[in-house]
Image (cartoon, rainbow, N blue to C red):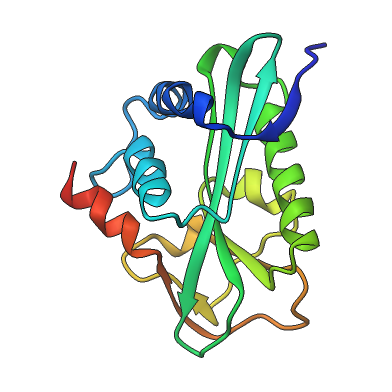
Length: 173
């Protein structure tokens, strides 16, 4: 079994996070822009609520980011989780799951009301994320959009807008 640790990113990790994220999403894109561009735009905008890496020995093998979202019903304190990236040769070893679990724990401790995510249904459901008609992200398939209250007792209602850095990443793609 692999032994890896999870810690907050440092400035020295930025270039390798870009590399790991690029490799993890090779051939995939979110509406025409790259996940590494999203992370960089969020970092440049000082909009990373959380940025954790998984380290196996001297190697960064995974990364997860979180950033603020806006919800049309006025609910405050929610964030987006993602992208979640794992170096391809390390995928299937529980690193992505460990990153998400740690991120959710740290977000709970920081007082975040809830989390939204875009991704694979099987992956996000195992962390208590659900789909619902009451909270949507227009322009993306409903079957890939998930939400999970953390400290809030209810699910917000309305449309979710991601941080403007997502749009900036699209312009720079």
